[in-house]
Length: 83
Image (cartoon, rainbow, N blue to C red; front, side, top):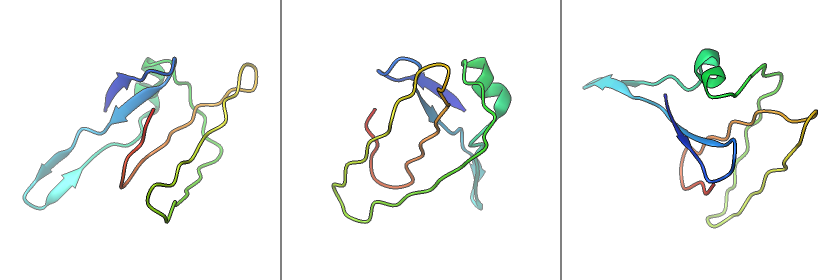
């Protein structure tokens, strides 16, 4: 995985490294060790999925500070994500 620092402190844009051939590809989307190397200690207890059906929909996320902070992984499958 390729971790690129985002403008928001402590946030990263994480891009999968595709390994593929004519049949398709494989990509790792999560690795606890790689996340930890970037200061993202994970012990996921919940995973959510959402869909914004209308083009141009804006969504926001809440921010938490210690001691209640949590690592968030946001994945955009189609469209655009702005950090």
